[in-house]
Length: 231
Image (cartoon, rainbow, N blue to C red; front, side, top):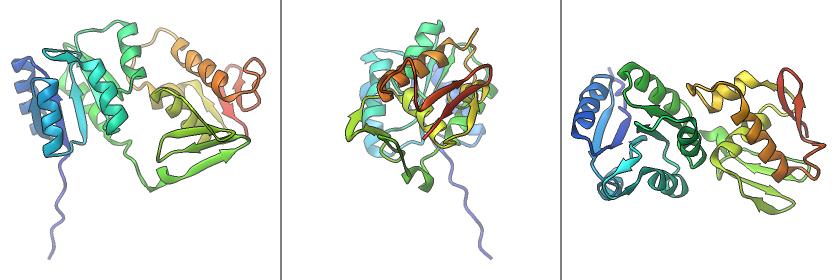
């Protein structure tokens, strides 16, 4: 009789404050995660050479550099999902963190249950075989595996969230995706007073993928409901 062994997700915690690191080590361990710790960016880089974690919990203020810069580095080189854990809680800080590649943003102090829920939500978005699909229509080509977009053969420079939004709409080509669905999928748990962040991303996308952003052909607004990506 064979027994199935469940692989425990590995979480790399990059945090110089020992009390937080120890508390997370214990709490996440109880929740079924394998925890690896690092006090600095240099130690984190060393840990990455030893084993590949499934997710990185990353503080913004670290002794040897900016967590934001390291987050950008991780996104550019490894595509590992990063959850920022920091005391900086202004909306500007949150948006900057998400723009440079963070999958989510948690502010101190936080409740362990909330953090665990966010970690599990991020881990439910792994790269799968479906992500090797290439979606092409009009003069656009979206490569989900490589996370690239080309327009008329020229690569389009998109931020992480711009690509995620375009991929979400492309996965439902010709269908309306509500504002709520966009926010839930891409900005889960983010306390926004309104939807200006979503509107800003839509505007930026139009500027990059439409011939006439003021009169979009592909990325269409369905007033009062959401958005639709037309082929």
